[in-house]
Amino acid sequence: MNQPDLSILQLVLNASWVVQLVMLLLVAVSIASWAAIFRKLFALNRVNTLNDDFEKDFWSGTSLNDLFAAAAQNAKLAGPMERIFASGMREYQKLRERRVSDASALLDGARRAMRASYQRELDAVETNLSFLASVGSVSPYVGLFGTVWGIMHAFTGLASLQTVTLASVAPGIAEALVATAIGLFAAIPAVVAYNRFARDIDRVAIKLETFIEEFSNILQRNLGAHSASGH
Image (cartoon, rainbow, N blue to C red; front, top):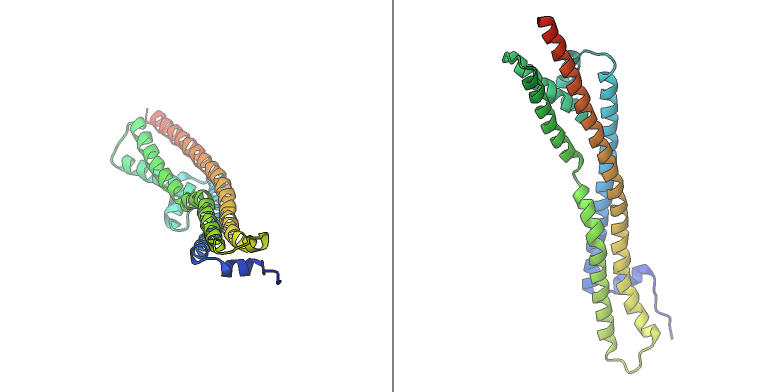
């Protein structure tokens, strides 16, 4: 009696069409999830590099007006921190042009503009994160559905046999279990990447919030200096 071929490829080819469909779906999801992981990895590296570069420029002693002019010129290639700074400066200058002299109104306007920009930047940084979370939580269940269906299919096929041995049961169950394996293969990297990116995005968010506070303090000092010189 020939031993059945239990190689992964043969198990996939011999599986029922429902299990094959589940496997195909999970492979497609896994490929999409890896693409999202690499995109997010490069995007976060770029965000951190741009933020660090701008932070160096900001604390290098360059005047706020020069930094604002550079940010306006470099709008498309700017990082989140630079765009937040630009939105705060833009609002601050608009209010100054309208002859708003109340320091708290100027500061509140700049801070609101920066907060709105901060929320937009954070939303942009978080794209694809919910997709990875969904892949991580749903893929094992989709794989499990494929396995349950495959085992049911295997046992209904055995109903017509007079004697059932382990050799006759094994291929059907092995085919079904491949679906669970693929489901876990899709889920595990997505969960690990999600946790890593969530931590990285938290760090970015804290850095941006700290910058908003520091820049607000600088504007406040500038307004204090203006009002003192005015008197």
